[in-house]
Amino acid sequence: MTKEDILQALREVHHPAKADRDLVEIGMVHDVEITDNKVVVTLEFPKRRDPLAEYLIGSARAALIRHLPSSVASEVKTVVVEDEKPKKKGLNLGLEQLAEVRHIVGIASGKGGVGKSTVAVNLACALARLGYKVGLADADVYGPSIPVMTGTEGAVPAAEPGAEEGQELIIPLEKFGVKWMSIGYFAERGQALIWRGPMACNALKQMILQVKWGPLDFLLVDMPPGTGDIHISLVQDIPMEGAVIVTTPQTVALADVEKGVNMFRNENVNRPIFGLVENMAWFTPEAHPDEKYYIFGRDGGADMARELGVDLLGRIPLVQGIRESGDAGEPAALGSRPDGLAFVELAGKLAEKLG
Ligand SMILES: Nc1ncnc2c1ncn2[C@@H]1O[C@H](COP(=O)(O)OP(=O)(O)O)[C@@H](O)[C@H]1O
Ligand SMILES: [Mg+2]
Image 1: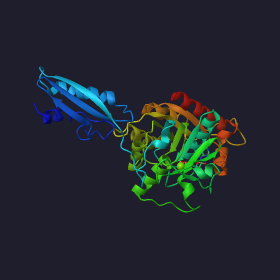
Image 2: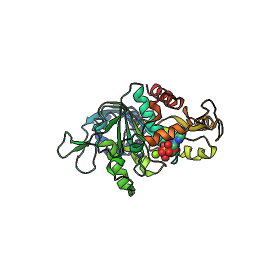
Image 3: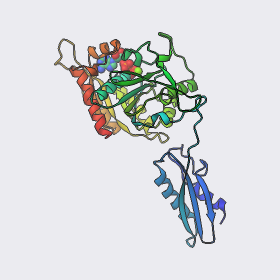
Image 4: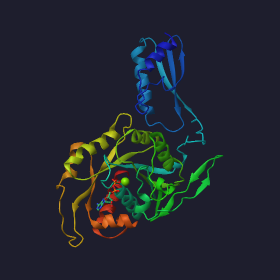
């Protein structure tokens, strides 16, 4: 038996979070010791805890048992190797600024215009209202709307030197008890942001990784609309715990929502969907606050959630006040009207779900 035989066996073990490449390919095999009647394989893990460690060790053991003659014993050991120091130059950003963030939740949708940013901003304010420490990163580099919705347009975030030489950290803005960050703060008012793919990708990673968030219970990420490569790359590079998907109730939206859900269920991403938020679930006229008109159908959101096997976390009405408060930079979730309270209820559900 040769080292090559052992490596061949270990090539059968694939790392689900590393694009399904095998242990040998991703350099996790630290050492192979072969004696007359025993094989000891040492697998290398980075310092940051790999949630898949147990699974990988078990699979490596099984692969060895399958390939070795029964007279040869085998053992799989592990060794922890310090993470390579992330380089601070350029865009080689590490995860240090997220070290004190407990839950990172993506707010996504299959397509634009369903109220994703409205839900993200109000959910952030509602979580803060419930006493949580909250931040929101506007990752919609093509159409950042957080500055307008929070009345922070024109504000310029401060920067300060980070712990390492040449490193600069952006200080998020604070308003309504929430820390806000958006690429909109770095663009001229009214100027269209035109990014090519990789630039957009880098810009939005900066909006999350180069920001001094400090301790947070929740960091919400307002994802760009759609389900392209940019999204998959974002979810893979940021330790996003899972996602909330925003939709409107029409059945025609189902296909889009499904795309949004599948983006997170994709084998290279594989993060849970915490639930669906049905926005514009019914219409309530300003003058008749007790009336509900189900103009897009009555149970669209609930049916969709059932069909996709996810929870319906909340239902938000279509009311003029939500649009107006968004335009005025005073999120509805701060008020005591029923539409504001719908967001508080939603926040409670999400917080409960994430423990
Ligand atoms: N529940 C609602 N009631 C009234 N207007 C809403 C509601 N949700 C969103 N809007 C409005 O619809 C428009 C699009 O919402 P936005 O949150 O920007 O969508 P997205 O981020 O999905 O593109 C905005 O003008 C917003 O104020
Ligand atoms: Mg938006």
